[in-house]
Length: 108
Image (cartoon, rainbow, N blue to C red; front, side):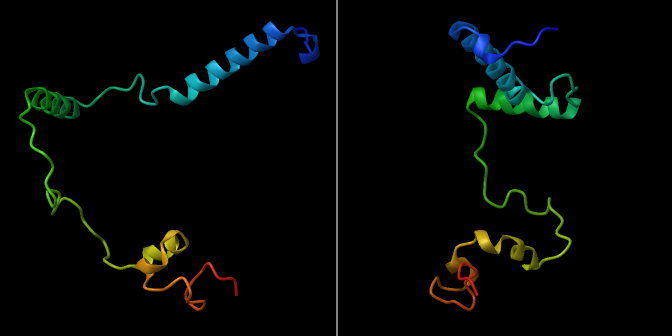
């Protein structure tokens, strides 16, 4: 395999090379990660029912609280929110932006 330097390429050859590399990179990024995997029959049935209802206009809109009882909380606390403190606005933390003691944006 011979090594070619960029300086030895024509403008059209360089454009072609760039296009090839970008196309390959986009193909990898935008490809379907589930390609080749089999869909479980119950999932396929649910998708068919949903698509049929949507096409027929009979699909009911989602209702708030419709997932009650479907999620099991192992612990109900707010300790996990500490991991996100720096991303939360001051008012949702119960602090104000001008409170240097509780505002993490203010360096100590």
